[in-house]
Image: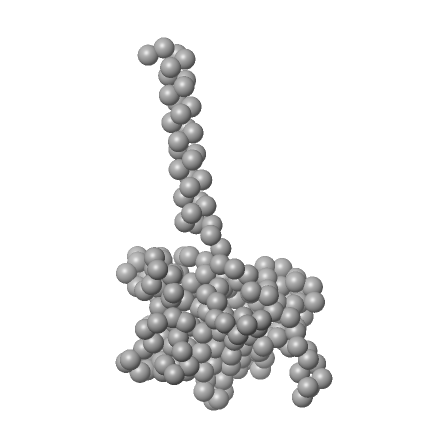
Length: 228
Ligand SMILES: [Cu+2]
């Protein structure tokens, strides 16, 4: 083969390799869930402003390619529809009141550290109206997932639903058995803050850390904090 032919072959091979890498990047790794934007509303009782953020955590999701992956949905304020997204834009230095409907069953924490409620208002979360600062998933299988923002020191164990007839179609309807979790936190200054679940809930993947655990939009996302 002539030098020219070898060079052309090499360039074609390199080009094909780059095209393959670009395809994998754009089609599998980079498709981001939509960013849901939230603004503060005036709270008549306090006169202050806050964001009311409503989410649900489901044992399944509505993606046809990966229906068995657990996922987070967030309620869009514009039309009250549930959207499968974990990227939420929030105003800076603002109180965020989170209501989370948990439809998934338990998976034990690998490290009880993540059973502590930290970084929330009063260091507390309310499970079905009851204040809780620790969920001991060693003494009882009580945690389904966690909502953890390491950079902000926020960790909230998400209570597990104990019914055996778990919701089987996401987004789950209010009539399916679920736990209600409420907590508040205050956003810091502007920036992108990564959050994730710390229960390795990717069943069927190595150490439970693949699949939904390693794909944005399922068990991890970003708080995109912007100037209010
Ligand atoms: Cu999880």
